[in-house]
Length: 310
Image (cartoon, rainbow, N blue to C red; front, side, top):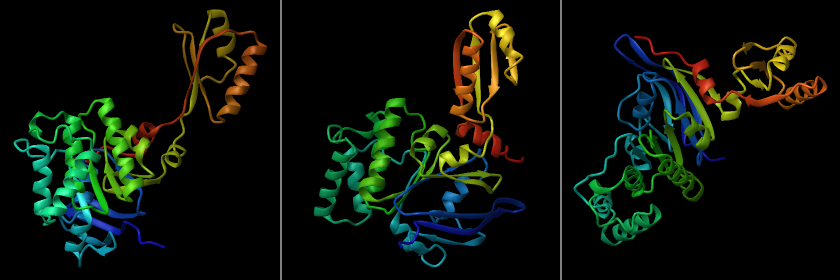
């Protein structure tokens, strides 16, 4: 079996008396998308900085891309790419010049540099804008160029920090597809940090929740959602008489007399819904609207994480 892209045991980091990370354990398989979520101040940035060799951990065994982070930091740096929240693109250079600069910094050589630059311009749909200054690019184009610059060195593992912050919905979905393609086509492993819980739900194979320096939950999006109660059905009745007859018999946890709505706990999924509809039909009670709410990652996040201590 192949080694994991990242393996972390007992990761700790403190600044003075303030403990930022308190015994983190992580295992991330190769060729997957992993999302680290948590409130501001939970320790996400510190985790990424340690794993990308920017700062040192106080304790812990850490392997990145098959290399011991403590003993082989140069090998780790050669195997990873980092795309930060704020673009590293030089606005005075053209898109092509930005890529050529990155290729020169990596000592690719002239012929290999040109091939790689053209490949990335085509792949990230930047060919038509290649000769234009990056300062004229839209936000989505700048993010694509930024990620293309990270890919110049063909990294095995990419740290993506807030990759779609500030992008419109269409540009965000374009970035999502690019990230998926990096994994499916290149076999790259993605370590994603994001404030958009929808983004983690959409992209990540596995998700970890960090709160006050501790991992409070790990798993797939569906596994995490099952940790949190709170599913319910909201029924809006067509008339006051039906509302009065039904509300007292449905075990509603909340009611709104003015809106003629009742909220009913839903622990049984389809079975609960079917039973409810059969009862309403048998009682000849008309329903104007019915909606089903299941816990989402927002519910998981709000339930399991805490505000950072001050």
